[in-house]
Length: 352
Image (cartoon, rainbow, N blue to C red; front, top):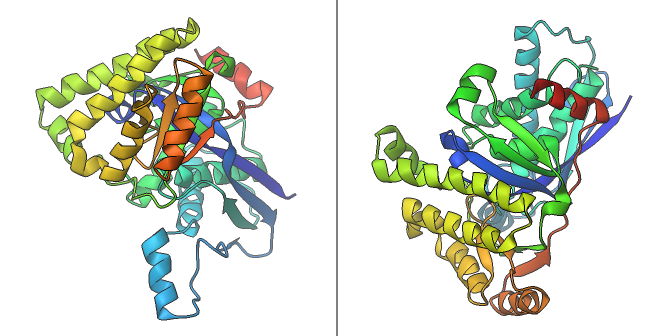
């Protein structure tokens, strides 16, 4: 049987990047921006290159260089290969029998590249869903464990990241996550709580057409954390606390509080990482949004910004105007619904 799955881009609303440091996060999946992976049975196992993202044939040397400067060296094939390996290893380690059959994997995506919207992990997440169904092992690999597998596949490729994005993509919808060390040690994963997407106010996505790389940001902060730098440790604790407070603000629909927490989340990130790591274009997106009184912060580690207009529609119109004048794309976010089945949702409540 042929299977196809979709995984959505994600927006980190609060708490990022504390997910890498035993913190907390509130994130949601974005409808309209997704990666799809298709798996069909075949005689030999084939991972198909994407006609645009995995180009190896070019009309000229100039075209090759333009492509590399615009999109980097990496397409999605390596991501698909990595999740196949991690999935197979996990099943073998846990005594999950896999039928001896082959398949062809192909993918497509409309998530903007390097925009801090987790385009890479969306491809991996959709591929994992295909593998679960093709081998009929969805009930043998728990929902809470799947984000770890996606992260493991990316670690295979040297991608530095936390679990937050993968949780948002495995679950869909809006999720509150607690990555405290005690949970990670005891369970091997965090505690993930799906929330009603209707708790969210209108939010806007802002991004540049040609953003910089979103993967270079965690560098010196991680080392300083390991070295016991008190400023970094206390700042990460505060960032995690913002997700906790933001979760409560959402439950009460207190959007004034939410706006304040979003701004503070970004300000702390800026203090920890410094302007060079964040990048001038990324900082400008935040500042343009704030120039009309909107709250704004990165969706991830740069490349795109999520904005909240606490004063309503007139402020939102102003936001659109200043963003377009600055040359940024701005759009109202539609939140993707939960992608879990009824059985999977029931299994979550059993584990909590």
